[in-house]
Length: 226
Image (tube, rainbow, N blue to C red):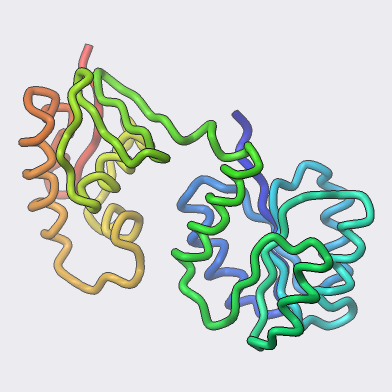
């Protein structure tokens, strides 16, 4: 499956980078626009954009104008961002066909969760919902992990860690990279917490725990043997 494209439109470069970083970790391809006119140029050029994240207050063309233009010939999902929590703005957004409405400041992780939920709802996100390797199967939508058909009793972070390993099979991952990707930037702690979670995860995987290999002096690698 091709990587899904998401267009992020905001005149604040810092905000675009923040959103892009979190979406890129979920394997989305992120396109950026700094104003409404640039957004429309990219939208008409690319054609296959899966979702638009759109700020309301922007120069040249504001978010409402961009939304009206897009809705003339496209039903692509739109998430609207605004610094104001005015009910009239929200109602206007829904009248124009906005799918979600998020007020600033917001949690990037919540935004990503909304993106994934909308894409699942519109039938675009299901291709990445099931992962499997060497008898390990992860159903992300059902939040279920099995080993040889038997469900594993995993904590939330153990589930996310195992999912991350399967998504990066054969790649040596440093503890810092795992920490940033699974615990995200809001976790400030000792990278050795990874070792504790890996130990528990290996135990719950039984003999398949050997798939998680230690890369000495660096971190870990998930690799299924022959």
